[in-house]
Length: 238
Image 1: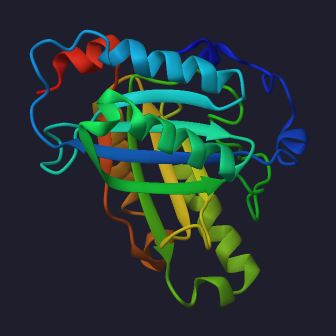
Image 2: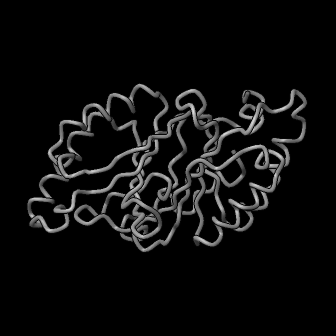
């Protein structure tokens, strides 16, 4: 996607070290105001130039995704992460000043950051561990039930452990679970990445059978799409 996509400063670090890292991440979804002109020369180049400038400031674009058709209200999603929330806000607004950004309206944008998992501190988001981005992503928020945080620790630990065991048959689907308390309307944002879209579908269906899901009161909207390089993404938009 950009030179930043190849950065691996966290590769090989242990979970203990990664849990000390403060890293904010943002998913921003846009829709076209109208079909782009046939002559789109320069649209992708301008955004790529911006992404390269952001990379020099440690704002990493993990991917640009085509979400058109999977929803009627969205066309493009950008997933980026940085050391500070301020850097992501700046990146978001700089994108909106580009020709492509001006041709779009914001639909949904939510920020989150990695905090150590309550019971399994070895669980690290794929993006923070600098795993390669996969071909597809499915992003959604969720909010736990009101009673979840007062359930005895041993019961929550058991339910989450069982939930994790159910995903063992899907090692190719990489999880990114990040906290969003006070950053928006949700408690958590989750992004599943995989090279085959049906694997995400199968995993999500399988996890419906977990006891922990009984303690979820909100888990929409979903934004799902294919990761595309900027020239291809712009060329294939309406």
